[in-house]
Amino acid sequence: MLIVAALGGNALLQRGQPMTADNQRKNALVAARALADILRAGHQLVITHGNGPQVGLLALQSPSKDGYPLDVLGAETAGMIGYMIEQELENVLQHDRPVATLLTQVVVNTNDPAFSAPTKFVGPVYDHQQAQIIADANGWQIAQDGAKWRRVVASPVPVEIPDTRVIQLLLDAGVVVICTGGGGIPVIRQPSGNLTGIEAVVDKDASSALLAQSLGADVLLLLTDVDAVYKDFGTNTAARIPLLSSQDAVQFDAPAGSMRPKLTAAAAFAKSGGTVGIGRLQDAAQIITNQAGTHVSN
Image (cartoon, rainbow, N blue to C red; front, side, top):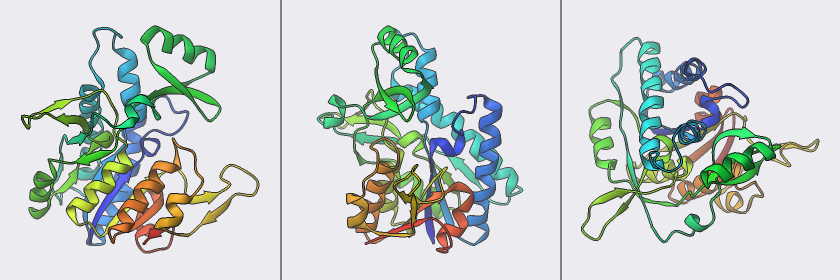
């Protein structure tokens, strides 16, 4: 089977962990070990990943007036994270399979309403007062993320992945492909057909669902730091949900910035005839065989 595995930003950098290169490399090794089990089971694999913590930190380190725009910072993080995953996966596989990282452009619509209502969390977490000071200094918007506050940016819907044909060429050659990092590099298509970058962060789950559809993948894995979708998550009455229909996934009550994008993406891919599994990175192989996680189907 062809499997697209989407790694959440929190799967690569645990909540509360210092954003050091050493921590991210250690987490990349954990990811590589889990992903290697999928390959050893005989499947083809495309790996995508988030970049919310990393791109936000780069933006914070960049001067507000003359700094690099988010599309360029997204490309930087895609290269950095892709390199770490690629190297660790090659090492775990003992260099038995070719692995390649592809910087992937994703086309969005300039009229997308997301540009006027940012919801995508990026960067470190702060208390409210500290977040407000940083936001005022940089002209950013902030929103509450659990007990803390973070920067929010536009997260437009991906409409096209021009690099799909390159990814298919690599798959046909037996390559494990790491792509669409951070949801892909956000670009718009000019009337001339030329592509140019735009300030945004595309949701990684939405891009992964679009990519899985475009490639005709059998399974989409949305991997994060929780083992399944839960009703009343974070409360004493929390209950794991093993199975959802695509319609139930769309209607499920979940916060906009956390599980909601995964459920929306899952429903979109399930409606196209694919199977979706949502759960922990460490359980990836078990999710494929219906032994773990939440499964979404049409």
